[in-house]
Image 1 (cartoon, helix red, strand yellow):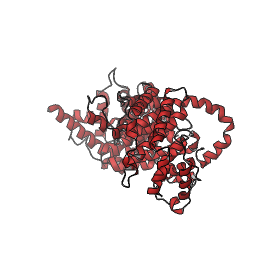
Image 2 (spheres, chains in turn brown, yellow):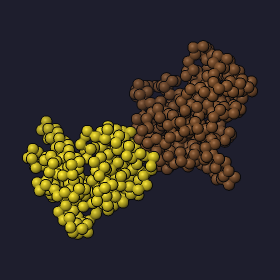
Image 3 (cartoon, helix red, strand yellow):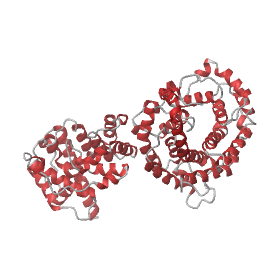
Amino acid sequence: MSVAGVGEAALDWVWAHRDGFALGDDALAADGQVNRTWKPLGELTRVCASVSLCTPPTDALHARASDLLDFAWQQTHRGELFGLMQSLEPFATYPLEVYAAFASAGFRHPGYEASAAVVARTRGWRLTEQYPTRRLGVLEAERHSGIQPHAPVPQALEGTWLGGLPEPWTFERSAGYALTHVVFHLTDWGRAPRGVPSGLADYLLHWLPPWLDTCLDARMWDLSCELLAVAASLPRPPEPSVLDDAWRRLATAQDSSGAVPEEGSAQDAAGPDAGPDPYAFTDCYHSTLMAVFAASLTTARPRHADRAEHAEHTEHADDAAQHAGQGAPG
Amino acid sequence: MEQSSTSALLQGTVLDLASDVVSALRSGDHVRAGSTLTGGGAGEGVARAAVRVLGADALLPSVLLRVPPDPGQLAVFKDAVAAHPPRDDAAPAVVWSHWAMARTLRRVEHPLTGPDAAEPAAEPGAAWLDEAGWQTLTHQLAVLAPLALPGEECAVTRAARRRPVDVARGFVRAVRRRDWQQAAGAGRWLTLLDGVPDTLGLAAGLDFVRLMGGSDPRVALQLEAARLMPAAVLL
């Protein structure tokens, strides 16, 4: 199956299962499980924002992604719930991180942005203890929400696994997830490949192939999709043979429903005759979203490459600034 | 039953022989090494077969350290080369392994006549490596690690020199797969190649492979070879 075919089938699954992303009553409960409520909704939004931006309006994927964005925004009561969330946990960063996904797609709530800015002015907000990778995400969220980022991106990048250019054979699952998100934040989720400093881009071009190969071998489909999205977010793509091989192997993991399971263990558990909908929502929603994300960035690449060449002459100033680590443009 | 005990005997002999080579490389003197081939412990046929498995590396101490081989060891090595010429339909790695053994034998027996006079039969082709993806390339080079020698000049070493990044990727893949023998073999090649990305961290990588897999003498052999590479001069 083609890359575009994998992406279309995966988005079909997402559309058919959109109710799984709906916010339930526990979304604002004091003991609510954010990872089962706001996180999937934010991820849906993030991916659909990217799809709608990297597909032309005439594309069927574009229309579907737009519909899903409307659906997701409705779930937040058109942004009203962000203020309520903030009142429950004023110094938690995740409401702003989820909100930023909407803001990046043009869905904004000025009232929430004003309240978030008040909190973000405190030393306490700036000193929130979190993983360096997450810190990059908060900086990106601030930028998308009209808040002055509280620290420079290069400084945050330095603290990450990827930013330190570690020996590539030390790659393991957790490092993999950290590094993919560093690239997502640096590139504004694939929109700004030039957000990756050139040394980092070279590093990734060298080592993505063995990481992809071994993750696919281990049937780590979710991380493989994320690595493919990284590959499609770099200023220069990896060799075509590397991508062709990876997509061919990933396509074998996709169920006829369009779902891509997180890991091989879910496939084993489902067995060979598992019926039309073999995986629980939690076992496949993220990997299926990541398949949509990676496929849309990969297929958009040729279209954008043309555009980038035209823009090349006017972007040298930006280029220098970004390679010096100024981060991705808005 | 008989077959499996023969294969267990062969495996054990290969490990003993690899241990001998490791000891010799560490001590710099074959006399202090073990005597798997000359002690009469293994049958003649098994000893020959074990030499075939290790290939030219069975004489690596003589090649890298310039110590003359034990006459008994040399005799078994010669027998192994003579008794098992590759068949016409043999895989390229088998053909090259034989070629490497023949070349090593000539070098050890005629150290003063120089490489030209020591040339064995016509060099096989290496097009299969140029056509291989980086995964297969690395696997095949690890199998042919006995050819990874300083100053060695043949189609396989030229193919390796053209693709340092691919071999480095293969090293990463082998470590991730916990295939320590392939990682050590690839690492040995990488010590000889220009253009390996610095970010690979080869020295730390070889230490890691030793830590995780160095108890296998076949792994240790490759790591000892890699350690001696920068200083070694080909016989």
